[in-house]
Every structure is written in C-alpha cells, then in structure tokens.
Length: 138
Length: 187
Image (tube, rainbow over the protein chains, first blue to last red):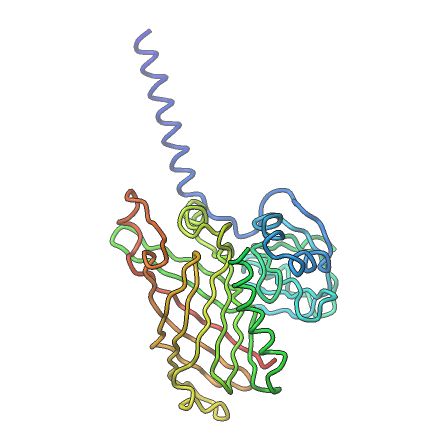
C-alpha cells in the first residue's frame, strides 16, 4: 500500500516537473494562435484608435483581430514581411507584421490587392499595428 | 488618460512636423527594427521589434521614435509573458518613445552617399518614466534616396522603475543593450 502511494507521488512529481519544463521551454508563437476576438474593417479599426486611444487599447490590446483591406505597401526581407493596409484616413492605416516563416505564402501579394489578415493588436503609432500576423484564404 | 495623451502628443507632433515641413526634409519608416539584448553568465535574452515608427527631419535633425512594447518577439513564451506582465506592464504602458536631436547634424552630407558617424541626445520614455539618453555610437548611411539609421545605447531597467524580482535578478543584466536599425524613406 505504502509502496503504491510512493509510486503515485513520484509519478505526480515527475508529471509536474515535465509540465514545468514544457512551460519554460515553450516557444513564443510567431503566428497569432487562437480564435479571432474581433472582426472589423480597417476603417473601423483605425477610427476606434483615432477617437480614443486609451479606450481602444482597453478593448483591443493583445486581442486577435481580423481585418480586411487594400494593400498599399509590401516590404519583405529575411526577417519577415510588413504589409500596410489602407483606411479612409489618409494619415494612418493598419501596419501588419508577418514572421519570416510565412514569407513564401506572401510572395505574390502586391499593392492594390485586397486581403484578410489576422494578427495580435499591439497598439497605435502612426497606424494601428498588428503583429504575429497570418494571411487568411482570399 | 494623461499618459496616453502625452505619448499621442509626441507622435502627433511628429505627424504635424511631417505635414508642414518642406517637401524633401522628412524621412520616415513604420517598420524600424529595434532589438534588445541582456547578457549575463546565466542567460542571454534577446527580443526583436520590427514595427518601430521613426520620423526624421534632416533639416532640423529632430528624430521621433515610437515603439509598441507588446510587439517585442522573444524566443520563449514565458520570457515574453514576464517581460510584458511583470517588468514592462505593457497593458498599462503600451508605448515607448524617444524624442531627440542629432548633435552632429552638420557633419552629415545628405547629398553625398556614404556612411557618417551620428550622435543623438534626447528623452526616452518607457514604463511611465522619462530619462535623458545619449547615443554616441550611431551611423547614418545616405544610400540612394534612403537613409539607413543605426544606433546602440544602454538602458538600466532600475532607472525606469522596472523592478526585477530577486529570484531572477542574476539572469537579467543591470544594463540592457538596445540596438536600432532602420531604413527611412522620403515622405
């Protein structure tokens, strides 16, 4: 009986240790994981930040956002891809950053295309910024 | 509210400068690369951000940088989580800004391609704290119609009220090396 209890305790400890190691070696996702929290147009997203940056951050910061918009610029190098989506505001749009691991998937995207992007909202500078982006089937 | 308004004002002043400055003086990027590096005997930690907004006026030498803390990419999920939640409190302070001036502007010949040493001084604001910062090891490369800006400086987390818990204090450097590398295009 005692032996059995010891065995169970040892197994539990081992499992906890394993889980600990798993957690501490887990890679940070380079492409946003999980369900979409908000789906909106680039106009709606930019307008939310233009109206009140603090309240937009309270609602959207670190949330997974899906936007659809027209591509204004594409920049790609070995570190990843940046795609700028326009909005009706001439000063700001949505700046989407993609990890290099999906560079190939984005190779054919060009200015003027309309695309859907899913990414993590990180806030507002000149544009609303999304990081860890993924492109959705168009 | 006040914090948000102030950081917005910094970016806004940059945008206004962009709107009113004579054509040709303003260079900018939305995709500047900023990385930081913490080196100790126990652990090397590196993170990258590829969405820094930089606005530079080559006539006045004024440079505005904005960066979103949540966009720093780490290798390990736990490190990224601690950085955002424990150290930088990035929900409360989502932005860092640098507003400064090139101190050797006259030495940079914007009409002649080449690499020029660049020095800058200004104010770095992060985690709700503003401190003067000097960048002495910078360069500006004039290349075609682009400007390639590079700079390195060190930041002590303690100066910005960033508390490092005792349990990990030997794993995080007292002085963090910040590296800026961006390609600016004319407005």
